[in-house]
Image (cartoon, rainbow, N blue to C red; front, side):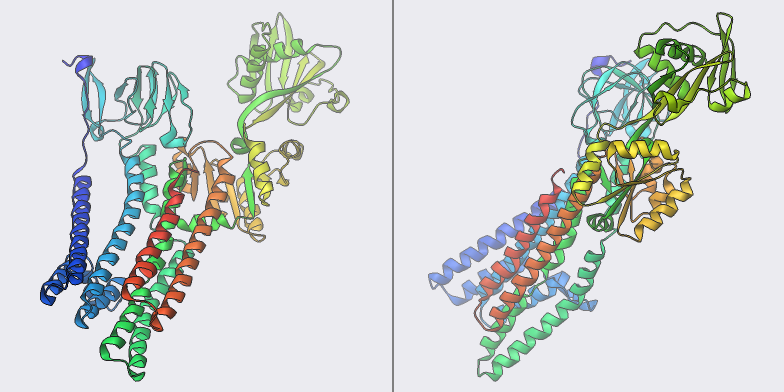
Length: 636
C-alpha cells in the first residue's frame, strides 16, 4: 500500500525532444566552428601567412557550414527544383574557384546562420505547441481499491478516480466528485483569473488546481481530452495554408530559375564589357547571392504560424492560416442569439399586475406550482421567488400539461400557470398585457380559478460582454447581424438593447444558413454560434466561429475558429489579430521585394561585394522578417 505522502509522479523529457535538442546543439557547434575558422582565415590573410594555409582554413569554414547546405542543393538539382540552397552552394563554390575564398566561406557561413535563424523561429512555434503538450502530465495519481497509485495517463480508463492535490495539474478531463477549489484554466480558455470549482463541475486536463483537494471522475481518455484535441488541431492548422502563402510558394519555384538565368546573363554582359573571367564571375555570383529568396520564402509561413500559436495561448483556436486571411477581410459578423449573445438561461424580467393582485402573490403562486416542474421556465420562476425571499406554499393535486403549463391547488384553491392557450382552453378571460406596460419576452400567465391576476415576462440574460463586443465591432466598421428563432418582439428588444445593426427573427436552423449565404454576397462573413444547433450556418459562413468550445466536441469539429471561453470580445480581438497578421505579411513581402530589387541592381552594376550581398540582402533581411513575424506569437 502507498501512503499519501509517498505518491509522487515524476516526469521527464521525451526521447524525441532530447534528440531534437542534441541536433540543435550540434548545428550550433557547427556554426561556431565555421565562424571561428572564417575569423581565423581573415586574420591569417591580413598577416599574409601562406596562401595555401589561408585557403585551407577558409575551405574548412565553408565545408563545415556547407554540410547542411550543399546536400540539400544537390537534391534540389536532381529533382529539378532549384532553391536557395542550390543558389548559395553555387555561389560559395564559385567564389572558391575564382580565387575569393574569404567571400566563399562568408557566403556559406552567413547563409548557414540565416538557416539557424529560420529554424529558431520554427522552434519557437514548435515550443509553443510543445508547451501545450507538456501541460498534460504523463502520469497521474489514481485511487485503486481505496489506495493511491501513480499510473501513466494513457493507462487511465473512463470512470477511474483521480486524486488532485493543491498546486498540481489535473491530468485528464473529468467531473469533480468531492472537494472544492479554484482552477487556473488559462491553458484551455485563456482566462486570467482562477475559476471556482466544486462537486459536479467539469475540469480539463492541463489546468492547475490552486488550493483544494479534489477527487475527479475521468470522462475522457488521454487522447480524447480537450487539450489533446487543441494540440492536434493546432498542428493540423499548419497544413492549411492561406491563398497568399500558396501564391508566394508558387512564385518562389519560378523565381529561382529566373535569378539563375539573370546571373548568367550578368556574367556574360560583364565579359562583353572587357572584364576578366574572374571579375565577371564575381559579379554574377554577387547577384546570385543577393537574389536568394530566403527571406521571401520564409516571410509568410513564419508569420502565419506565429499568429496561430499566439492565438492558441489566449484560448482562440485557429484551424489554419486560410481562416486568418479570411478573418482579416471581415465585413459582416452574424451572431446566433440564444447561447451566444445571451446565456441561454431565462430570468424574470417584468411582472404585470392585474385585478389588484401584488407582485409577491403572483410570483409565489407561480413558483409554488413550478417547484414540481423541470422545465427551464419553471426553474426561472423558482429562482426569482428565492431571490426575493418569498414565502412559497406547497401545492397539492399538481398536474403538468405538455405544451400548456401546469395546474394545481394551493390551500384548496385551483391555480393555473402557463401560456395563453392554457387560460383560453380553461375559459379564463385574459387581461390585455398592453394595458399594463408589459415588455416583450416569454409570457407566463397566472390565474386563480377563472381570474387572470398576473402575467410574468421572462427573458434571456445577455452575456456580460455582449454590448462591449458589438460596440467594438461597430467601431471597426463591421456590420453586425443577430439571427434568432425567437419571435420578432423578443428579437427587436434584444437588438435595441445591444445596439446591433440588424436582426432576423423566427428562423429555423436551415433558414439561418440561408441568411448567412445571403450575407456573404455583401462581403466576407463570420458567423458566431454555439457549435451544436448552428452547424449549418457555421459551415456556410466564410469563417465559422464557435463559442465555449472547451465544453463541446461538436464546436471544436464544426467550426473554423473555436473560442475556448464564452467571451464575445474575443471576436473583435480575433479580427484585429488577423488584420495585424496580414499587415505583417505585407510588410515582410514588401521589404523582401524592395530590398532584393535594390541590392540586385547594385550587385548587377558591381557596387556590392559578396560580403555585403550576404550580410544585407540575405541574412540581414531574413533576420528582420523573422523578428517582425515572431511579434505575433505574443498573446492577444
